[in-house]
Image (cartoon, rainbow, N blue to C red):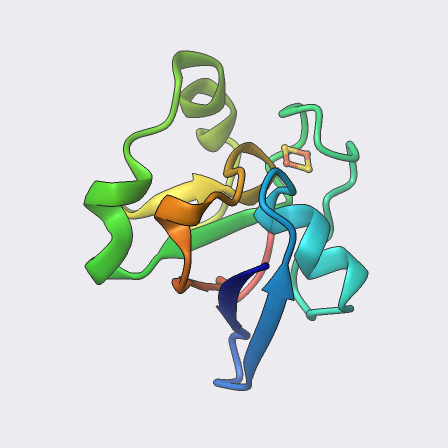
Length: 106
Ligand code: FES
């Protein structure tokens, strides 16, 4: 198990124990974290699973791939730390990852 922290827009912190290989989006939905809609179910086709990667983790998570970057154009209030949470797969290297949910999805 690896640790994942998702901070909801109202500041509520959701500390989750997650399976390596699962995506951040899947864990957010499974644990009913508010603000992650994930309308396309993880196909990188909706941009409603937008999150901000905590500054301490941006380098380790890395930048989005081209397809994700194109889809991020449809997200609300995109920042340099923006990612689509369905495209971030948990691993030992991301143990302790922290992400923040935006005010709203697109
Ligand atoms: Fe649709 Fe992530 S769930 S882009």
